[in-house]
Image (tube, rainbow, N blue to C red):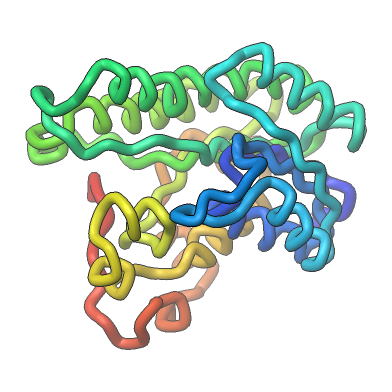
Length: 272
């Protein structure tokens, strides 16, 4: 698969997994639309759309930094319009932006519930909606959504219903789009990591340095995403995929290089 002049629209691309995917695809010569809210750096999170764009271009791609809050459908449409005007179209959508709060029902405030559903569910839906007309014009168009398999084991509901609902809704959007867009040759899949990934969310919200040291680097998800995007969109669609399994399909089974701490015991991610 040749990604030269292919345009990839990535939400939440200023840091973490989104930026890792952007950099991986930049190495293939892709055009990357960096879509996120971060225009000034938060010291706890790091990175802005502008610093990410600089890294993308240094890695061999072309970048367009677009400030966008995906909770606002007008900003979403404006971001898509800017991408199409700048690069001439959109070939691939990566729905990566997400909010997390692992709180039980009593501890979940309405504003936190709304934030997760506005970004994870509403944002994913309306970013996809805005990109679809442009994806229909492309060959081997893909949508990849960073969300988990829908695992109905009650342990994934018992402690954080609101977050679970939002992530499973993302996966249902991914699967629904696969069915809706199959006749147009547009693939839609969900992708999720086997282990926790060393990101600001893991560092600040989940487990600090201890969990970071039991995690893998974001590059494992980026490499898995690359292999998904190399597949034919007419047939490789409608799946909830795990990064390890995607790489195993390619004969890549030695994953030791992805560990933050070589040889450390790894911590399974949620929903698996």
